[in-house]
Image 1 (cartoon, one colour):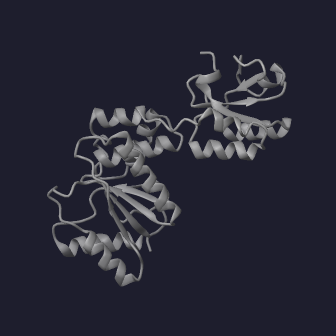
Image 2: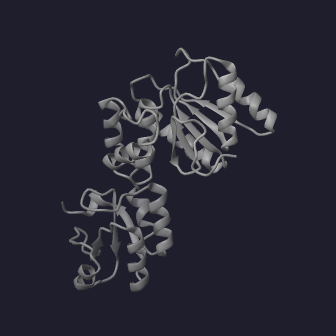
Image 3: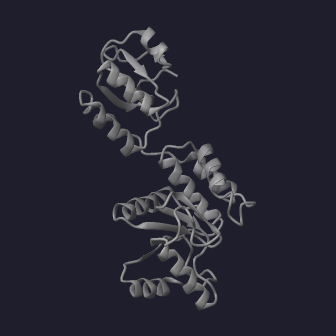
Length: 273
């Protein structure tokens, strides 16, 4: 087995430590070289390959080698082609399908390899949208991709590689929680609320956030300012205080100290910008 955080091939990087790897095409023109690379992936624990290339591209298929080598080891490996046209972007619906495939593979305890041809454009687009889904802003996701790729041979190349691909990451938005579903948790414990936050990948910061946290009972303005939070006015007179938390650990601590229950709602419905 490879040492932790090592990659099976040089031109790859861990998008998520020891669970999601991204990089260049894992096959090769010479079969012996391709088998060597596939064995390295399997040795690192990678068992689920998301292939973003189109079938007609001038690349040697590797899926048959993957299944052969995995069979020799007595393990199950999956090759899932989810094609995106080179130097292009997928539709929003198809990007969601790709991200759902990643989530499902992780739930099945697979380690994943996401790749296109060079591992820069299409791979970077998917990787960036995945990072946004995990809570980063588009700009932060692009910066994180640059950091993650800093030790790869193609670090000098921008990933993703086109302006259109970069813009897809910048504009990628996580699903907005429906108001009727959000209000159902109004009187439930904080842990329930945090589960909703995690499930919908909500961004909880500032006037342009995806959602906000609100205290349902009276809380003094002094308490809020001393804690470093912002106090906002609400359109709904029954809801007295709204807090835009920038750190969920701080939010949890605040709620525990004040023994308050929280509710999550779409920010745009209540926030006065």
